[in-house]
Amino acid sequence: MRVYQDAVTGFTVRQYTEGPERNAKLYFTSENFSTNDQYFFFNKQQLPGKDDGGTYRCEWATGEMTRVTDYDYSGFALDRERNVAYACRNGTEVWEISLDTCERVKRGNLPAGGRVTGHLTAANTGRIACSYHLANKIYALVTLDAGQEEAQVVYRSDYRLGHAQICPTDENLIFYIHETEGDAFQRTWMCDVQEGYVRPYYVEHPNEWITHEVWAADGAEMALMKLDPPGFVDGTKGELHTGNIIIGDKDGRHFDVAVSSTQLLHPCLSRDRKWLCADRISYLGVDIQEGVVLVERATGKTKLIATTGSCKTGADHQHPSFNRKGDMILFSNPDSEGNAQVCTIDLKQVLANW
Image 1 (tube, rainbow, N blue to C red):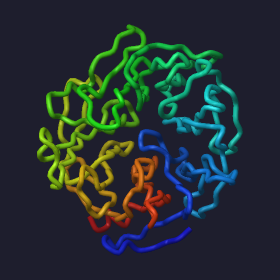
Image 2 (cartoon, one colour):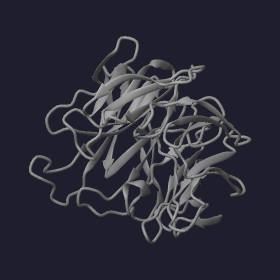
Image 3 (tube, rainbow, N blue to C red):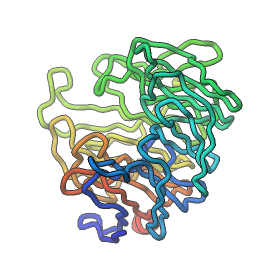
Image 4 (tube, rainbow, N blue to C red):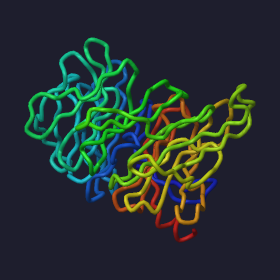
């Protein structure tokens, strides 16, 4: 573990990993910390000739690391309330993993021959859900309830489905997207499992660009990014782009702009919903100093709190997210080669100078 002072912001940052491989925090749509905030989790890239890749647990205070799963596992994500994680073994077996002991218990099976197109998610009832690519190449939403051995396909689509996130407090609602790896005519969707229908969540108008959505921990709201690039219709011109973090209610009937700032991309809500964080990234032909910003939701005040290197790939994005208490942010800091390395910043020092 290396402790350093950010040359631009002056705040103290802890860096826990170094290359040459990528060491990336879990995606911002998953919890990243154990329920007591003692541990956080990250994914280590497996380089050719090595057998040390997989998901690791790291103790925040000491930097001590434990390998939790190897490369046979995918879709690793933490439960919102219980001190467990979920992952797929060999593509289709769903396992529950204790964050304290790292012991594993098999929960059931996803449809044979397919693969998850993101990470697993769980509601407070224990229902697990994910977006899935079936063996017949059709995309689907899949659920696995407590006590079930075989998962159920609850929706099928010709579209490439991704970013599926079951509502943390309503097992009947599954948010998902039409994945284009860029803009989409209508990206965001909500599936009503019981009624068996889907509907747009944020209804897009021509030339809107919606991206990177995440549930609040209590399932009452979602945060998402609405990009506003200049020259959107005719192509960008190398100018700064506005990232608008918008907040929508659970039903997608009301949306407010929480903050607008340059080059924001991935938003995340603190568990009390009073704070937002996001990464500031070079994209759409614009190169800037990349980093992490903190936003006070009540006032819209935005502050750059950490600077980072530039990302080599999307997997190396900063993807900042809060710990459970909301007084720390975990983020990936790309190194000189553009590979993500895991860092934390204690927000108590930031708020003391807010």
